[in-house]
Length: 180
Image (tube, rainbow, N blue to C red):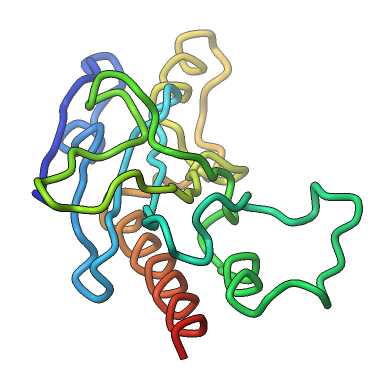
């Protein structure tokens, strides 16, 4: 997959910070596993990270949390899916779905090169939890008089990419369990 970045959000009123120079969306191939990865900024300005798995991967088509099924019994979960539900990324997994249709810079999807697997099933996490700084929201709060340092920390692109590498490693380990 071609490394690609998009800058689609006007951040001129968010104040100074690393978000000013970071892309609003980036796609790359994880060098350790070969899995497709995405970084995407949400409307509050926080970054989210995603890893795509191809058809045939044991996670393809799965949800990110087995707890939504009232008949779920962790003891019955195949080991490859147990790895999905045990993966530890920032704020835990919060997303699982197929590629979204629409503008490449605005969607949770990738631009595949000829011959690359499609469609991918994306698993993701967001950096918009308690203690996380959301630059767009922080600026709006400041303008409303609600601001002030609340000890929040911005999770930058390097942080999100490292978390994507963790998720990609779990996806690779899951695939190996099935092929072994």
